[in-house]
Image 1: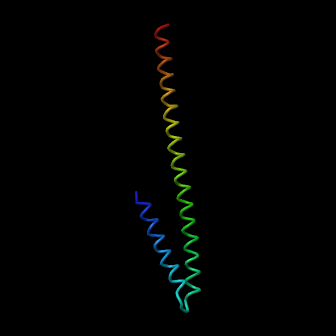
Image 2: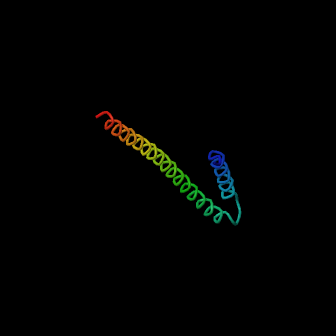
Image 3: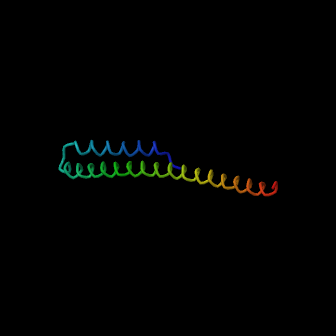
Length: 88
């Protein structure tokens, strides 16, 4: 898995550089500002999506842990039932 913190820092660094360009004097200032704003929006969507995937991963892990516990319980009950018939 890639290093999420490093990627986040790199993206923030690039966004700061783009913002500095948009604040500089020049004929492309407005165009750079529009692109910078769009990059900020895309970055926020990325962070939101990443948070959603983290929640999904956590929920999946909890679900499969629960399934494993239920499967174990069924096995124990089945074996208990089998051994109960032997004793009677």
